Length: 420
Image 1 (cartoon, helix red, strand yellow):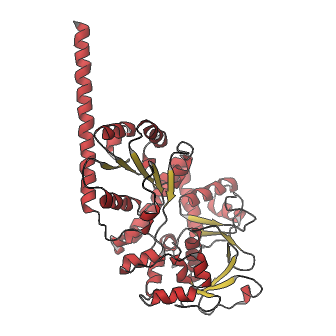
Image 2 (cartoon, rainbow, N blue to C red):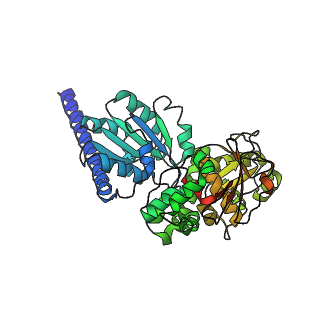
Image 3 (cartoon, rainbow, N blue to C red):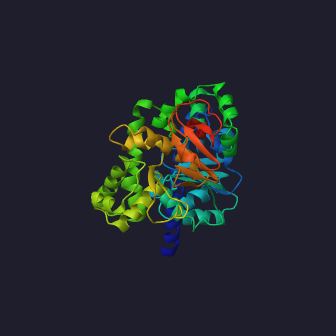
């Protein structure tokens, strides 16, 4: 009799536990429906068409603030009616403090779910292993996940190898920024067309808009789409995103002691006030109070977190832990946020050029010109920039700021914002 009573007690306990799990999932669904109802689909980034959504396990990684969550919700809104077939959840939700990701996927699938969209996956411990298990055990369920911490996403590649298709989502190109600001859409131009047919490309654009009327605004706040929410609070939101990377993302990934976070901030501050920065490692070590070996690791963390770009000459290799030839802010918006004073105009130009071109391939420094990309050489400057640096170079171009249309081998700087 006692054994029978114990069995009944266990059954009742498991029954109510199951009820609680279903109730908790209902709360997640209500939160999702609230977001679903509010998301707009009038301004959608073209990146959504680059993803093959038919794959069973899709990862989207990108820096904080580039619009991953909005894009996911827009995709869901445009392709799934509200209902039980799809569920969005952020893994920093309190639900996951008492419920596992695997169990959510299992219950959702049993209730007819087809697509589970998971945001901020790096906030959940052992997320990669559980996603692997869901993929293997529940083949009928499609999974899409995002992560703001590139460091954690990179580390998880081993667990999800051969299963997950991962896409890198950049911030807005100048082309995309214009589309959001004006409603005028332009096609992406191939690199070869920008070099060989830049006059025709520029004329096609200026028939519709005046690109220079938007270029300076883009440099200051156009890389992150949350400028659309409130331009006045853009600097504050960007600063908060940077602090989250420095105080949470990097320390969690690299086990940086709390007392060393201030050194990480100091290193970024020193570099930011002189980017593009030609690093003297000994001097930088003394100024920051960080040993050279530790500093090299910190520079890699800041680069993998999309705060810096390390530029090398080709013989050094972009993945080298040696001394980079220059250090850039990852994008011009960061220069305004991190620098104590208004950024130098020449530095802004180089940072924009490197940022936009690096999204389609590897950019290298050159001993004579500023940059080399593929078999082409580029010198960056203003309207009056001369041809001295490219005089002896084949396939060499002057990239000029403050001009609408170029001529021969002189290309407008802004046109390189139409490469993606």
